[in-house]
Image (cartoon, rainbow, N blue to C red; front, top):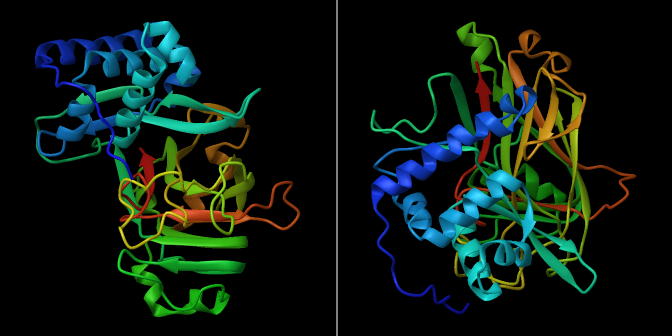
Length: 343
């Protein structure tokens, strides 16, 4: 992988960064309606973990890109360059830096000639907290589930799993998914079928009502080798109710994932898209965009002691292109499957 030249360092006063972050938060009040405000995407950082985010925003051009995507929604790299008067190559480098910091999500889409990289802001508000190392607000209950701790599965080969140290079990053998070694899995893949995770319903245990549920996970399609044009319909279900179908555009091996270990060859899946699935009283949202009428009341959260999350490529899908699920130690985002309950 070639190192990317980012140009000279730019000193960016902290006071100006805070002003811009405050502007983003205030402008949200004026430009979004009540329905979308329920689905805001928050990022809380502390002095202990703020460096990657603040460094990514320390360049005025990157801060301008982040603000532009927040105000105008998804744009491709050419549009960003044109709106901000930047060379296309510079805009692409800045987007890569923002994506590596988890501030921007990108997706390859078909264009007239080849494909285009569409970018969107990953968060509506960024808060720098000096109250300690908490990473979530007091009204959020969060559980991180390692991808190998599924409670049930039914998968079809090609399939497999690996840790940051090597392959687990046997490749293309669904029986490997029974192995106790699965607890070490940091990347798993299959062509068709599902894996299901059972999260504790900590809001019910605490006697608190849930106003919004969010799932965060890094996903891509699965093809022998890699291909940027390999669509796959991935269905997300909660407590037996299908809440969303996302069509993953491809399986990526053009560059090494930010956290993918060096032993994993570039010919294998390197990274995916960080997807946010949110359900509240007004419906289900995919990356902040409302996609269905399925609401919290349809999930029976008060009736269940656990919350079952199924990730599936079902038989009969229009695009049965498999799935890669990236966990901590693989891909572009170093975390497990996150369940957040806003109470």
